[in-house]
Length: 500
Image 1 (cartoon, rainbow, N blue to C red):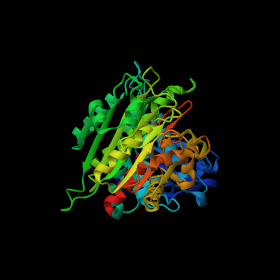
Image 2: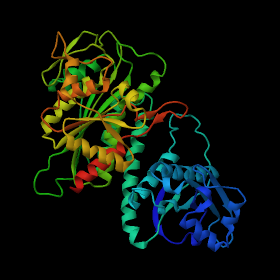
Image 3: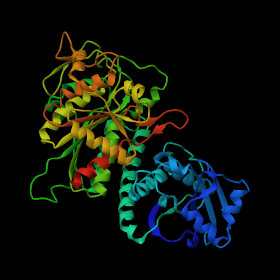
């Protein structure tokens, strides 16, 4: 889809449709006022008749408005002007794109991007318009023998800015939005694929294809190489499945191209459990199909690397992905087993369904070899995080407050928010084991925190943060599917680091 920036008066825009906003109590936005003036009060007259009142979520399509070059004018309700913040803006854009898609127009000019959103800048408006558009138009029908027939799709969208001086800023915002959207689509597609297609081998193949397309460095380790590294914890999870594990190292060396000194990499670590049955500690059957999404951390790492490469960020970024299945079999981990991690620390496995931390801990130990600037792991780790934060915010825990603040700020700028939870030593007591250096679970209380406490024991030699995306990586119900989060958060975090 082609998305571009333009400065110009709405009544003069030719094409299939011009989209303008109406606030509560029939108050026209600036672009709507200009159309109304050119049409001799046509919009105001329509609104006075009660066809639309500007309430949030409402819309009205008008054909052949007098004095207007466009074939149609779409009015979108914005709600109360004094409360026009992030959510009403995003909802308005989403509503507009849905109507445009439903009526089958091929092109449109969106003037909602000109409207002031409280505490936001124009660049945010434009980037989010790109992301909401791509999200609304996203379809996953690769696995259907007969995909649902779609109306003529929206192929060209122009985002309006008031001043010509804003064009350069707008083009940069759109480019960033398109790169993030590309990363999100990749993460969504991988997450939505079934476990019999999206295996560890398939993820490795996609990483290789990504590396070839964007000039990234790639190393894919198979079981013998993983064994040689001493990743006993990771391999203990993989051994219950017939699908072989993979350990993937993907590198974007944007920093080395910009400076004479070697730049330490930012390392992203992704959990890649392509299907999680729970192992011997078998999950309930209801909604177990959703456990194909347990590789969304890995998918988000691939998406973030894709966007970083597309944006040519002057930053060294390394993605580490540990990927395998967690299945019950005669070879699978058993509750009570003790395994030895790459770090040499031993782990008593009290619950085989707490397997994500068992693969991540070895990846975090591997990250030491890279002498990282910082490490961020991303994982659908705990159901406790869903209970704590729902499906709105990603859980954040870190051993370095400055790194946590960077991620919180990036999440706010990306509208992909996270929330920090404590990582106090008091919680470490819950991981004590009579038979090993630690247990892999700490009980029901504070489950998200104790999972991060477990990981922190393997990340003591560098600044580290953990993102628990169990509640944000996918949505359940009628419209279930992968969300692509937190690709937006990660790209904003990387872009800020690159900017210095």
